[in-house]
Length: 381
Image (cartoon, rainbow, N blue to C red):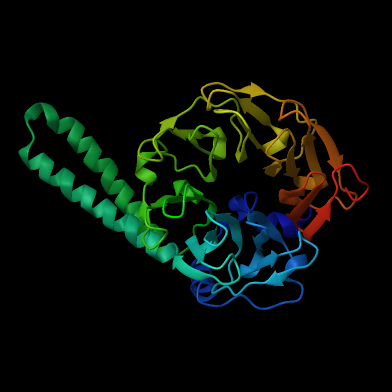
């Protein structure tokens, strides 16, 4: 996969983009968060990172704030009106009309018209402000508790206060850098309740369709602030988050509480794919690592992916077909509900990031090349 894709792809960009922020990055983000996406005839053939169905419409997001949509199963594309020009990493629709997209600069966008026009709801500056305010409130609560604590409670409270002060210092330092942290995925349970996850343990949630977003990162046992790459609700209602260093979090109460699950792999996971039956899902990531659960993540079985390329995004036809898009042109195909996979490799070897079924034997891929309609068994792969 060439250097361009490494610089911009949803997950592989993290180590590069997040390790090099300085003063120039702050200025750049301040600019692109307020600069509408440039209208281009090449928008559908530039880097696109995610794709989602909004009813019969397809909507894809990617570089420079580009959002494109198709009403003819990917045959032709139009560019949406977008108020930012940052890399967009994920899109999700709760209804045919109501959708959300997230990306770099901590941006969250919303559409009320099926993806034709978008408005900014949130960004990294607001995220930093929210985290600082929560951290300050927590420090004050602990300081008050210390004043009234018994001798037996002092040691634990002093340790907790020290950790809270460190967290506040980190939040203040992050704010000095600016809106630097990307969101990497967005998922809505319905038109009101949704979640956005991202770098350094970002977890924000809304209960009002995105009019307000609250920091819920403190609900996760993620002291190392590992990057959270994907969030998904699987059949049965369980919500899973996977990310850097093999972390897996599970919520059985729509995000009110989270537990850490034992992970079958210590490398990064990039995707989750729910299947037909309750509690059945796949997770996948670096080096072709692929695992399956039948009990909502309580245990995992390794699935042979037949590739060492990183797996980035997936689609399920609602029956037995599962396809997973990967680096280096890889597409992993399953005809038996994700139990076994065969590998197809596109001749161009350009990186794939996401895909969706539009017909039983037809998919739309997105990636380094933009959008591409393919037939899994055909020569176009």
